[in-house]
Length: 113
Length: 106
Image (cartoon, rainbow over all chains, first blue to last red; front, side, top):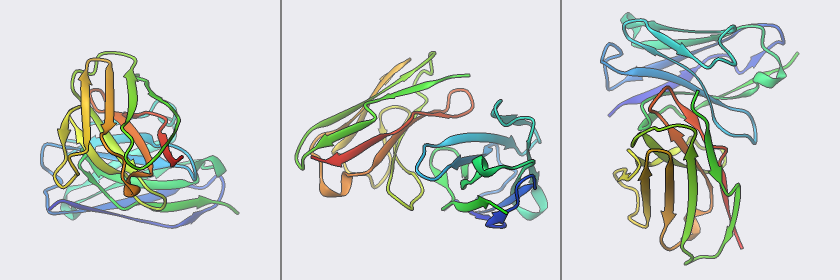
């Protein structure tokens, strides 16, 4: 059974960098899949952030592209999200996913001083 | 980018009602559409994938139809556990989500 688990700081200061990791179990991160990040601001809808293939190819939401980096660590079976220059608008629950079927439980990141 | 338009945004219904939610894609996404149910504080739960395939463990009162640009999610007989928010999602080209439909008690 594929399982994903997000981890990272729950509080980030404005203008700082949000960094999250998604640990993958039950599947090889080198399998032929795209590994995805999605976020959901409190009380709002779901927003696709971007995705990475094990080969290193990435695709990003154009609205976030200038601030987002998704990377993959094959040796640790995990992939990561970095979002720079954060503001309060980046406060959200962040989810990692592999296909529509497998999602992490999500982690709340609050941007506040 | 593909835009997903979901309607209605809110739906008031009673237990036992048949309810239908509509999702429209801004361009052809073939069958690459999923439906999710989300309750407060929980991650989205996959109900339907490939437009009409029922995810394992999901009650048969949920069904999905459509292809191309027009899709529907139908709950044949609304149950108390079904009051939640529902999202459509295309995964033909990257991912994009509808705005969500909140199903509330009438």
